[in-house]
Length: 301
Image 1 (cartoon, rainbow, N blue to C red):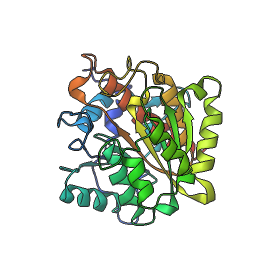
Image 2 (image 1 turned 90 degrees about the vertical axis):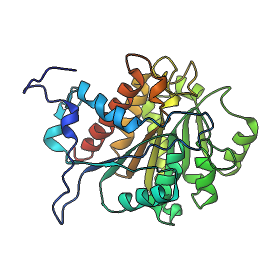
Image 3 (image 1 turned 180 degrees about the vertical axis):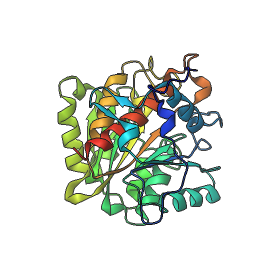
Image 4 (image 1 turned 45 degrees about the horizontal axis):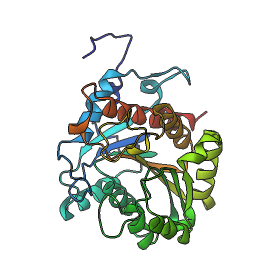
């Protein structure tokens, strides 16, 4: 662990657990929900949110790119973790927490991708038609049933409009033609990995926000870490060689969160027991959290 230095505040110092004063709201609220029980690939119940929080201690609060200190301009509330979010009681507790605060941005740490369905459904409170969804994911998540492979289908079935869903980073040999056809039939905009070779990230972000946020819709962003190349996310069971770079993922997250229509972001699909000894997967996830915070601060500039 890094030695203490008063001139080098660690990012973990941002994790404030004090309830905001009445009448005020946090800029960003952080919540852990380690879903894992319905995963297509068996995984550990060991808490990913705890590992990501611990990894924040390895980074500072200073953004060189934007010339800002997150600690100076951001009110962040750490709401802790929901116990057993895969069960009915845990799902209710997740919904109660997400609707207890009018945060400018929710950052929800999973868990597997089943979290996306649970969290967005809870935030929408029966009005999924008023939301848009952007996924950064190698997979379509259009499987039938209820699992970490089905959240997009579940959300569409419950009222999310496919014409306001954008999926970025879809990978070769990680999906099926049948599920791709289902997504297209639902009106989902698919931006596959190969398109990112010829398009700028600015262009992709602009299109994703235009589609998902049309009409002033609130936007939920699902960051499935297995969208990245397996070399940088060995803790993601379904990650494959040839995915996004760590830098591409970080830039996408910062740019997306700079838009005020983005009201929630989740970070999913890490099994910490599979991570490399240097913890590169959870360290990248911690940086994704910081990129989301830096993006939020851009809203005021």
